[in-house]
Length: 338
Image (cartoon, rainbow, N blue to C red; front, side):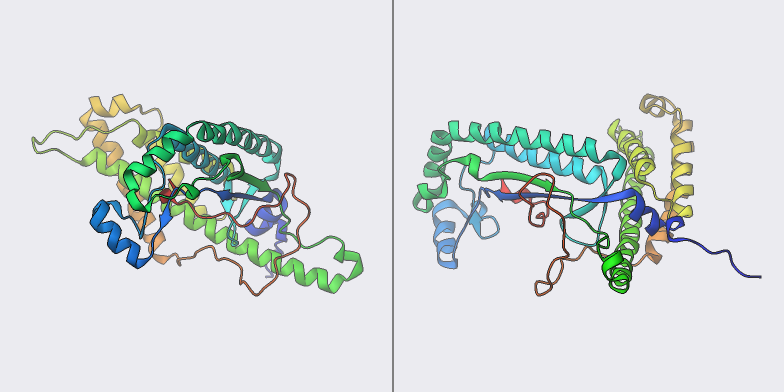
């Protein structure tokens, strides 16, 4: 008996290809509030400033706790968190996959973050004297006024675009054979994107379930249950919603485990768990079962990482970005920037 034919659109990779688009987000240039030092400078600075002030071979140029610098850091973090929360990973650094149906909403939201960047940078211009004074007082002979941009507005750029990750349609008629080769390459990337999404979801799910289970079962020195924050449940429920929105149904096992965890918390409020020891134990047992199965899945899951394209290889052709100019590959989050 022959197997039924499965068309590409019925596979997880096919659903990604037909229902998702690529979105790139970058922060370039983005002023790094950090001054690198040579080995000689580090040795001298350690005596002048103290070893604890030398972080990763450098020093902060301006006060990282200044409200204007913290505001810019928060803006970058919020934009990246939104972008990642509305998308799935893609095997090319700086790109993620968003639902085509949500493209307009995502574009509008990212434009909103862009609009916030200019006044936030202007606030840094207004605080320049305070920032310079802090650098002079705290960095001693390492202080250099030239480390401060003349205009912070030119040093903070948030850019996004929607490059193509599909086979170029113009090849379909011009060179059908080349089109099929490009389509096969694109589908291979979507297949890898499916694996990356499964890995990312399962790892995040395992961490959230483990944390909540630990908080439900932990006891203090007095033998009483440890108090847990509402966010231990709230974060897990937010994960359920994001998974539901972005789920491409590539792993029935994962779908079932999430249904089990959701069912364990259905109708349960944080206060209910604090007030009822029996309910805490019941929910903890259910989550432990989920965690055990999930651990087995993770152990059998190969580790994957998003790779940067080889420097020697030209980038795939892409259409003009919706919001010019087209960004370079987005840098990974770096808390040390501020």
